[in-house]
Image 1 (tube, one colour):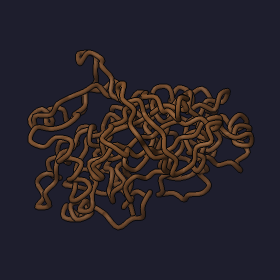
Image 2: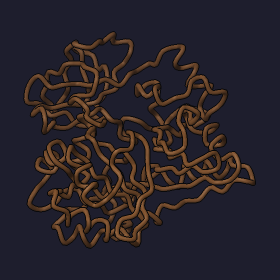
Image 3: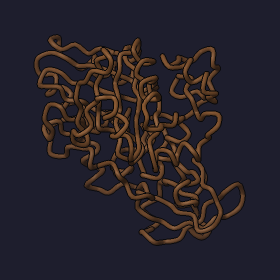
Image 4: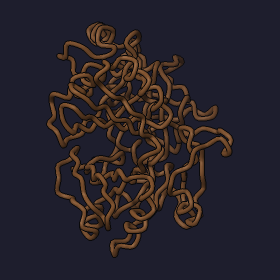
Amino acid sequence: MTDVGSKDSADLLTSPLHDRHVALGAKFAAFGGWDMPLEYAGGGVLKEHAAVREGVGVFDVSHLGKARITGPGAADFVNACLSNDLGRIKPGKAQYTLCCDDATGGVVDDIIAYLYGDDHVFLIPNAANTTEVVRRLSAAAPAELTVTNEHADFAVLAVQGPRSAELLAELGLPTDHEYMSFATADLNGVTLTVCRTGYTGEHGYELVVPSGDATRVWDALFGASVPARACGLAARDTLRTEMGYPLHGQDLSMDITPVQARAGWAVGWNKPEFWGRDVLTAEKAAGARRTLWGLVANDRGIPRAHMSVLSGDRTVGEITSGTFSPTRKIGIALALLDTAAGLAEGDTVEVDVRGRRSSMTVTKPPFVQPSVK
């Protein structure tokens, strides 16, 4: 997911569910070129966050990209481009992966890849980066493959929380497939894909729905007896930060490699090729000059992106993502810290919070125990 911007709303794309959000009193913000709900009237971030941790929340994340690669050898082609190893999974499974720049190793985007078969891979990139990801794949693809940008063709609804399976089961949708897998289903004549994925750290699902059917599915979710709360992207951000999940454009970027961001687990180091392999392998061997850590406030300070991290009189890093944790009731952050500073888990640093030094402890995320499975 990319970060909030300030683009004029007249220039922004809208979700097929935009009218539903307006009716719910949503406050909107620019997100990756789209006008998306930030929070809703009558709830706000804290109630929406709590709904996901305690019950079930529904997010419209239709701004996320969609791209499809089809043709003989499609899976092998994607595997030779993106970082993770598709050979580790079987058809019907999904995988978190990265599109890296071949020259620098920087992250063009982080992506969920859905493996349908040797000749069919479906990708969900971030909103602002979809065109660039499709451009790079299209430029590299052999003639027998087709790379299609399907960004506007599908809506995505994230149904997240400990009661998410109960809600979907009431609607007759599949719920018992494994984490990071997907299944095709029918809901009142709508063919959709139910994915056991999400960005909140809770048990949950993402529904990939044809755009023209999005309102029917949304209405069905809120017409069930299991009470669901509509949740905006502000709560999505606090939820993912509590898990230590990276936000592209902040914790991952063209300037922040997977080695620096502790995302090496999403790299198939033993693969013979993927974009950025040579430079990333060299960086891994030499050791990154900076590393992404978690910070937990020891006082009432609330860290925010771009704030400086200090050790004594030295600046030793910068906050990449920071927020108030609604679950823990304290400030938490992700921060890139200089390797040369020699900081370790449990060390204390200070963050310049608007001119006041706030004490924080270095830690490894997540900040809240995940319940995805």
